[in-house]
View 1 (tube, helix red, strand yellow):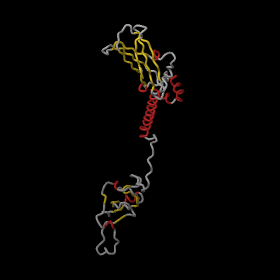
View 2 (cartoon, one colour):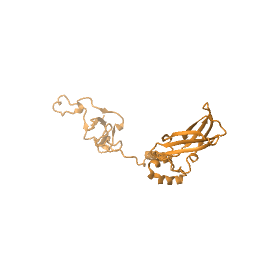
View 3 (tube, rainbow, N blue to C red):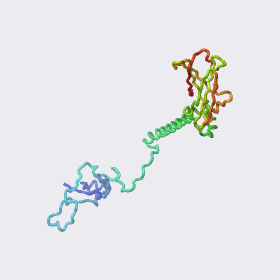
View 4 (cartoon, rainbow, N blue to C red):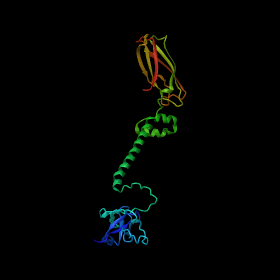
Length: 270
């Protein structure tokens, strides 16, 4: 029986059983199947036979023979030829930063266009939401920043809208109102009131709702009055009610066909 040969990986110290054919195949160059280090199997040959007792003091001490060696008896891939297995691990060093996907690989071809599509979709949705907000609040924006009015006027000329004084009912109030019968004309009522804008910007003229009630405070008749019906011919309806401004109201109402004992007056935006 030919003598068994053993070689030892200088990196991880694993001992492998080898044959002369393996060592002669690539000039003795082999690769450790455990740590993947390449080494010269001939130079790293070791003997696992302990020295004779008489020679123990003179023989050099081989640490592989001082205890049970690690002998790999797996298949031929346990000890590989260089170039036939996995490449040896590189020496430790700084880890380079991960490269961004270029879209040229298989994964890049699947994720690249999809990612770009989602990014474009998000930007488009944000722009659409911003455009809707600007369109909805254009009147308030122009009232607070008059310099923006020419821009919004041009946009509305294309979109078919208009820039008007904003509708902010919270800043409007009825300071005083009165409904009296005209003594000179039977059935004729005179409504007087004062509308006040408490805000810091001009506001659109509101509509008025006049309700006539009977003695039990039940509705007899109700009518909505548009700004053109109560503001008078000299009022600039397009400019709105000036900040901290007041609008006097005086209208005549024909109530000859009704019998009323009281009234209610509200303002609103349709």
